[in-house]
Image (spheres, rainbow, N blue to C red):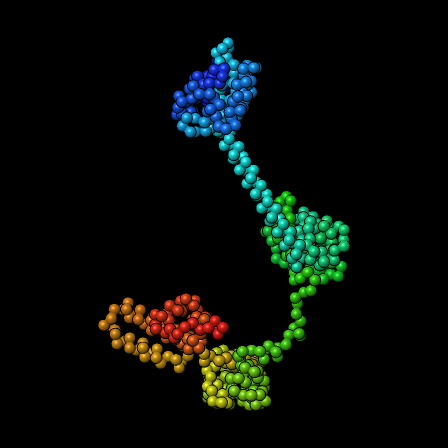
Amino acid sequence: MSNINIAQPDVTLLLDLDGVIREATLSRSLSGEGVHDWLGKRWTETVVDVGGEKVQRMLSDAREQGVSAFRQVTQRFPSGLELPMEYTTVLLGGRAGLLAVGKNLQAVAELQSRLIAAQQAMERDYWKLREVETRYRLLFDTSNEPVMLLRTADLRILQANPAALAALDLKSAPDAGDRDFVQTIAPEDRDAFQSMTLRAREHGKAPGILVHLGSERKPWLVRASLMSPEPNSVTMLQLSPGWHGQTAIVSPDSISIDDLIERLPDGFVVLDCDGVIRRANRAFLDLVEAGAKGSVVGERLARWLSRPGADLAVLLANVERHKFVRMFTTTIQGELGTTTEVEISAAGNDDTAPQYIGALIRDVGRRIGAPGDDKNLRSSLGAMAERIGKTPLRTLVKDTVAIVERHYVKSALDLANDNRTVAAELLGLSRQSLYAKLNRYGLDRGSETPEGAE
């Protein structure tokens, strides 16, 4: 045994020529295992499944050649522990029998398992990367916005999506994927573009600039972003507003001010310096309950104000003195008898002596907390004063808050015609919070408003 060059065997088995175990020795790492039950058993009976064939081969090789090759088997210990082992078998001199020495391969097996797990993780990451690249390519190619990737060092085009190729008229160019992008820019814009890309290289991105591209020198808003770090940096360019090259500039002459004024939800009138109406929109006709513009144009605005002489005179005087008036409160008396609380904002066409005044008239009668709605609130709060000295301050404050909150919740429901969704929006509450307050103050007026009505 001293001549056998086996480094630190974990299991040493002394066998007879038929492979029956006569003696078994374990190393310190396996000293907790009892192997007394192995004695008298064939070695093949102590290994798992196919390991018996490998054991028979080692025994045969050792008897014929004196020593067997190393083979791996799973050794089953009497305690039930199973370990991967690597054995070799040596023929002892004469009829002394055979000696089998084995090395525990559990650490190696664990390393192999970890290696396989790492390889599988790498493969999963690889396919995830491929999926991301596929999505990127689909988005890049199908985007209607022109996008290009440039090599930052020389600003040559690395990739360009179809929209960018169409914008630069490079669809048929064979070298479109390796072309100097600066050459597609109008000469007068190249310095500004170079400065923008330099800023993008230093700060990661740069604000857009207007440049003229392609043979037709169409205007494009170009934005630059740095995608990868040095030394092989890539710059992404985005062109706006669209792949067809049309700008989003709208000529002021094409904007119809008359149509915008006519569509305003608030009343709008143009007055001369005497307060005579020269122009009015549809919303003003609704306020004064007039059927046609001809019935109001040429009339003084004072005709429909609650205090005809005072209100209009004060309005005109303040516009002349302060150049404008904001939130002038008054009342409009309609032709059919309806009274509407309004606010007027007005300004003249000149700072010194305006000949015409534009006035925006807004209906504020539906606002929460209008003056006519506060009688019940004041009465309830007045009753609270009688409890001073009889009720703790904390309770007084809590009850006062409840009275005010109930008043405004009820006012919101009245304004919204019991539509809870609208009432919640007026109060800045969620629908759930509004429902809780309705239950708390006994204001639940029935089932929820039908969804179609909201």
